[in-house]
Image (cartoon, rainbow, N blue to C red; front, side, top):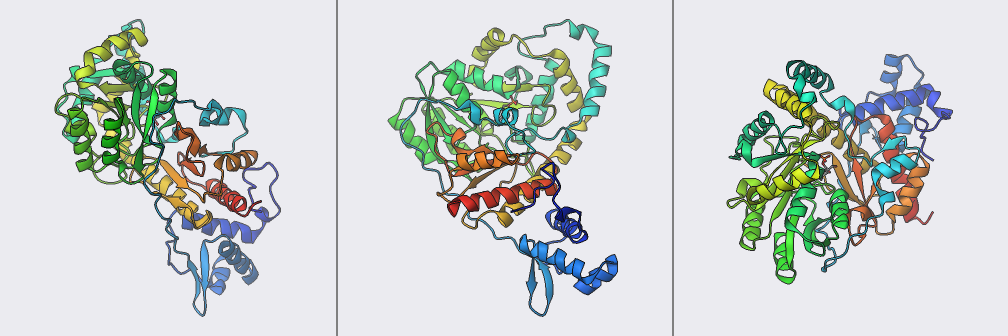
Length: 486
Ligand SMILES: Cc1ncc(COP(=O)(O)O)c(C=O)c1O
């Protein structure tokens, strides 16, 4: 059995040994990319003299790394870092064709799993490590704002939000070609409130809403609470929803709204190409079906410019674009926004009824942070950290999961969608993993038809360590055990 000593209270006997420590150190160098695939390792003799350890210690360390799939011996040549097997990408999904009522099992939610179990390595929660946020800068700005404008503590603020923040958001939209006035923006209590308001503005209980499949479970919970029916549309892990399938579905069903994540969707990580976004926006506009675009992850691109939202192709205000500072600046602030086009006034009235306003103090703090230029620097750091975390997780999954697993490697965000051999019931895998202190989000939570029974979402929210590496190894072993009928 794999050694999970970092996770268990009782360290195993092997972990204290010299060879094991050396193996761990080399494994860390491989996972962090210091040692690259195909690179030759020092000979046993050389390493033993460099480190002043016995030949046996180095041999044992190399054997351990070979067993764990990090390196391979090449006859007459020495030891090399093993190249990764690339996993195949999952196919376009095939959800049921009819709309369904939504009933979500709250016990499968990552926050519930974390509450009810003793989790040591959590791949379930999509909340980035606090270390990745500019907490000190925000703390300083918050103190300044309170000093300069103490009345903010006693002010309800305006339901539409702080004009300073809305101006900053409008300015940033120029980067993706968005010509948005500050007045077109409504500040909300995170993306979640925005999603609630948008759906409330355009649907009645019993209506059908088209969604990607699999879809973010938070959205499914909102649909459930509004008694809306979900129409799952086939979605590709690389390019997002199938526009052809959506077009057909809207002919066969009275679809009242469509909720999508064109940029780095959760959980698939898909990125819709610009031409698809354009076709999507035009097609929905012709049919007068509002598009609710959840652009929460749009900023999380690993390379180049941030992708354009579907809103960039909106000509008649049919797109409601939702975004938030929760994931990107301050999870604790819960400040989000929506640019709702032709539904803006309706949303403003709903915001008034729902929560009246969002904290002025926190809005102004973010506005000043954006103004200071600190945001760009922070964003670069955050994107790099997410890219590295995801790359390490991908490498570990490819190393340790059964060879017939399928995986899409995203170009942004920090979630991974993994499809396993159909023999693996992820709910059984989850029970086994939880018993060992490891958590992830099971596929059925992302589907009203409870599909994706052999799929899971892995969130890469912390700087990668050997603790994560071993947890992935253990998950891979457990999945292989289920396939073998253990
Ligand atoms: C796809 C998606 N939309 C919306 C939200 C909610 O956003 P916020 O935390 O800003 O309310 C989340 C949070 O996990 C999410 O993953």
